[in-house]
Image 1 (cartoon, rainbow over the protein chains, first blue to last red):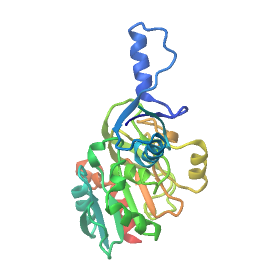
Image 2 (cartoon, rainbow over the protein chains, first blue to last red):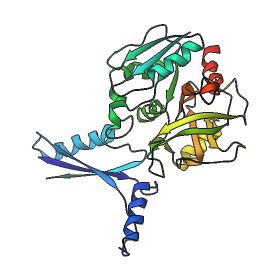
Image 3 (cartoon, rainbow over the protein chains, first blue to last red):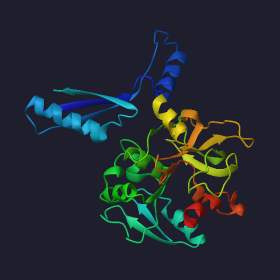
Image 4 (tube, each protein chain N blue to C red):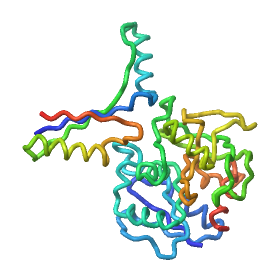
Length: 79
Length: 224
């Protein structure tokens, strides 16, 4: 099973990289963008085959190390 | 006085830190991160600056799980004195020993220059040799020095006199190089035995090299 973890700064925490990318898009005349957030994606190949157990395990990974929950949110997708 | 300095893969300020404390008369020992115990005679533990684990994932994120960190947490919880400089500050926040987190600098650039800081609270061993309102000149060298804490956390820091240093100009007016909340450059925990700052006092030990304002900071630890 593959777990895709997307980590990004929480709403309310200023995302300087997102802001810089937004500014660059604006200067390239892409005017239809109201906000940009830059995050990172971590792809895990899991040996676990049970979806529920895998979700619990990856959630713990996110809480323990993959995200810093002081400033970051995470989303997990299992495929 | 025994100063123990941690060394992770990627740490690069351990020898500067050693030199600075030895210059002040302390004995020092550099301890590799795979060790499970700290020297029993440790009076001060320093998590030195650098790029532990190449700053992979987040600055300090992987170092927090090194074997030695269990001993560090035990030492700190027993009231042992801990100082985290730059990457060491990042490691201590990641490990939950200090509140908040360090984000990418607002301007996205690595900043390496001397900066003036204002002493906000000297009611602690780190800054007791300085006066509140003193301006010190200490180098900064970081990419992820943008201190973040939520509003409730900031109010707690204020209330408990945990904000030690702020980035200012030479007159003490706020001048924020990296976007840190409330221009914070250094904090301590509530119990005032764990200290973290992004600037490098160990690089400000000789006036001929630009500043010796770090001497009074580090001396505070040796006096107590």
